[in-house]
Amino acid sequence: MSRNPGNRVSVKPKNIIMERTKIQDLQHMEHLILQTLFQASLKDENGEEITLGEYHFKFSNAVRTAGQCRPGEKLIKLSRRLCEANLHQWDKIKAILLHEMAHAFTAKIYGMKHAGHTPKFRKVARQLGTPVTGSQTPKGFNLEIPYKYKLTCPNCGKVTKYNQKVNRSCGKCNPGKYDPRYKMEISQIH
Image 1: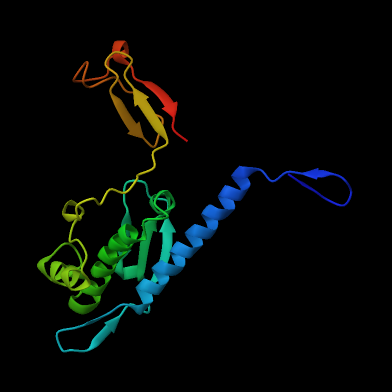
Image 2 (image 1 turned 90 degrees about the vertical axis):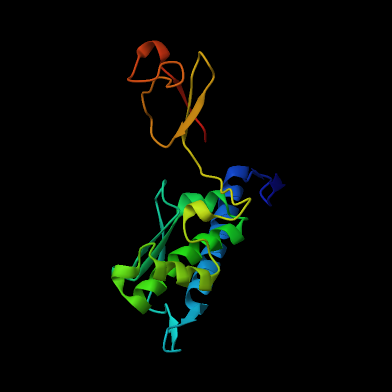
């Protein structure tokens, strides 16, 4: 609380201040992403330097995908929710970015048909020093994935997280199709 000249009390809610800080942190992360994207270069098989200067970056609203490269659109996307939840883990976000950049470099050097997880992609990914697939992430590479809802079984206590409100019964108590006797209770996480 602070007093202003008219003896009125002004209050700055903590959530507004925290939201402003979060936006500033996300803007700083976007700056680091763009800096990494536009400063990166690789040499092709003829020794010529290749850059991604014509690519664009934007945050996506993806929940299940950490990053995406669209070589045809010259676009790299990272999940805004994943980045917001991991604002202070730049090394992990950078690994995802480099993976998407490996797709872009592969498409530029070898053509679109090699931009998937092909041997040529793996070669480029190794040159950038990034994991080739999600299953090859380094030890300790646990990014917090923000979920909106939590389902809890009232019988066994099993917890499952979702991003949409869903009507499910517990698969542990009753494997198979939906059974209302084992309906899981839904609660919002944030």
